[in-house]
Each structure stands twice: as C-alpha cells, then as structure tokens.
Image (cartoon, rainbow, N blue to C red; front, side, top):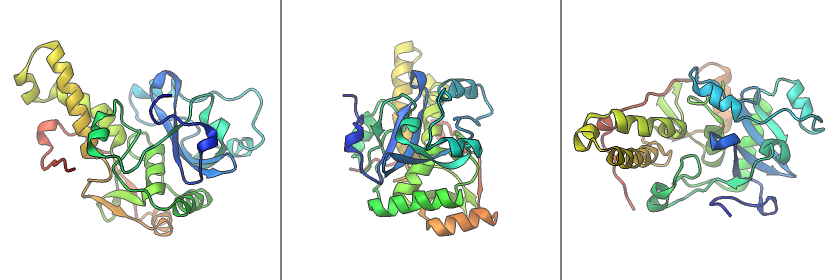
Length: 265
C-alpha cells in the first residue's frame, strides 16, 4: 500500500483525508466527521482559481459529475457546491484512493517525502475540536473565498486540525504555503543565481531543484512559520463576515532571499 493510503474502515472522526485527482496533478483535502461524511472546501467543485495555465490542468483533475445524482450530495450541488460543503465519502473520493494526512512528522521524514501536501510537523488538536471547527465552518460557510494558491482545501483542513492561520498583519490572512512551495520550489532552484553558479550540468540542476523544493516545503510548513497564530473558529467567521480579514496573494520568493531557515530535530 502506498504511503499514507488507508482503508475506509480505519477512518475516525477528525481525520484529515485527501485523494489525488487524475494523473496525480493535485490532491483534494477534507475533514472526515463520521457516518461516511466529509466536510471540505471547494470552488464550485473545482480546484481552480490560479488565473494561470494551471487552471486547465487542475480542471482536468477534478471529479466528474456522476450520471446518477448522489442522494446525500445533490442538494448541496444544486445550491452551488461552493465554499465549505458536506459530501459523502464516495463523492469526495470521486473514484480515487483514500489517504490520511500525517501530523507531528519528524524533520527527516518530512524532507524525505517526495511530494508536498501529505504531512506537516504541526500538532493536531483533539478530534472533537477538529470536528467542531469543520462543522462550524460548514454552518457559517466561513472560510472566505476559495483560491488554489491563496486559500484552498488543504489550508481549510490544516486549520480545522490545528487552529493555525497565517496572518501577514491583523487584517490580512495568508495561507499555509503548501501549494506555493509545490510550484515555487523547483522554479526558485532553476532561477536562483547561486544554483546556476554551482553547476550547469542538467543532472546537477535536477538534484538542486529537488533539494530546494524540499527546503521550500519545510520553510512553508505551518509548524515553523513565525507568522502563524492560533485563531478561534467563532472569531474567524465573525471577522470574515465583517470584512475585517481578507486573503492575500502569496509571493514566490527565490531561495537566495529566504533567510533564517533553521532545521531542528
């Protein structure tokens, strides 16, 4: 069985689960609340919103509309299937495999992961707290506007599990950085001047890109970010409703500009 892959029988309420879409382009994340139900964050059922060519790839990796409407999920789809929604486990998976997101991962294992969006060093809160956050956000539809880079399904699930959000200042909400590091790490490695000076060999460049990708994921992890803070779910939804918090577009920073990164054991 692939790493993190689990069976439905092993699910417990409060689990952060995900499923890779077609061609493993992107994973969709949610919180399992029991009774074969998942609460997740989406934009009209599609992982879109980058404003780039990635939208085409991500749309191709989204679940197809079933020929026979699901009795549990169709009412939500008719309502627009937008924002924080409730789905059955089968509709959430859309034919894909089931994986459990890992928490409290040690640094060595985190850096050894081949792809981002599968684990974090952060500590999860108790399961009843996680389910409460997810249900409250469902009732209030209160996680802001969906965007694959700014505010996505993984950010939603990580918040439900940890209560942590990134704030640039008191009124500007960022994101966990997982999606940004996934795209930005190899790009930063290729474009950064120090890397080009170290080697011009294609294999050397590839190795550098992989290394920088892993470090970029580590630097973006919610557990070590100094701009992450614990936010009460009731406070979050009220601040979003009042317009006191907004989502900002993250910046992809070249590796030579990333300072103060320390890997601890």
